[in-house]
Image (cartoon, rainbow, N blue to C red; front, side, top):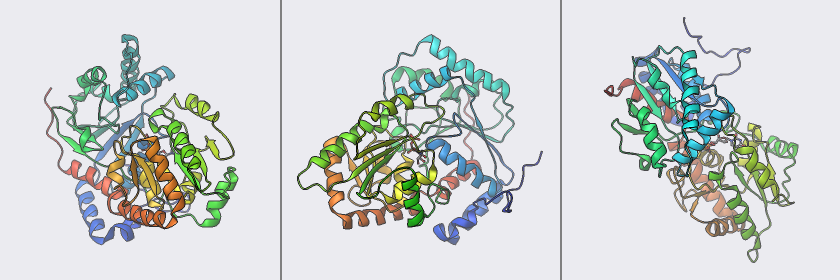
Length: 416
Ligand code: UDP
């Protein structure tokens, strides 16, 4: 069966193509990518992940699979269909891979393995490349005869994975022909090559494209976010690793500092379909609501995310573990200074004092919030550098080209 040819028509809407990136990345990069794509024309790639919606993996796969198709790579994306039990187990596993403790009973393992087995029964795979994202679909590999390279793309912060969970997962990881990680210090002792691909943003989607002031104000007003005070915002899934409680505390400390400029904190979040923890965390945060602290679960509105990242005086991403942290690049792209936790993928994006600030404690975060609230010139300077960092390093075309390079030089099959 031939895949549909993406094109611009009034009915199908507007599909972003490589040409749209030309003014941002230049002629040379565009032609280089075109040449690589031409050599791979018609390649069939299958991506498998755990959710079509919510979180950075779904965010990048949405844009990446479309852009890949626009250059002739037949890039498909399938989702694991799992029960709530399965997603509860896989969220615990996700947490354990980021260093949490876990009671990983035989019962939980059975749920995990059974759901993946059932998905394998439903899915025929006859592609030229298979890219499996994160631990949820990882065991798929054991149910297929391997006729092409299989890649495990792990988006998590693997600084300190739980040893028992890691060694349990090794029985599948070790069969993959290559592993892709977001950060060099996530590398583990593994038999196959470990490649480092930084994630990246789509500058043209609703979340990141230019919004004028009028629409920005309208979006905020529509969701009841006043603009009479400067806004400090964190926009994240409601997840313990994003440390929303630490954000509230840092904001309160900053506001108590002598001579502090008054501001309003907005915690905006959403829930991913593969993350059952979110609702509980959201409810627990609602107790901190006040005139100056807004906690909103309206983050499904991507133009609100755009408006908030654009109009905030400072964006926080005070994570304690962070695979990459797309929200950092998203805010930097909008020229908004970011204060980020000095963990995982955040220091790949923020150079402390140059295009944002890195912090390692609540106190330090409070200091930086207070400093940026007072110094708009500094905000503008950091924001300007932030935008140029993203332009150089964190646009989707760079990420896509890394995949093209991998497809052009596939890893040798791992014998197991
Ligand atoms: N996001 C959103 N609405 C929200 C919270 C987050 O659209 O209320 C998006 C955010 O803009 C980013 C992605 O979800 O594109 C989160 O990716 P990130 O890498 O920062 O974190 P993850 O959720 O994958 O841990």
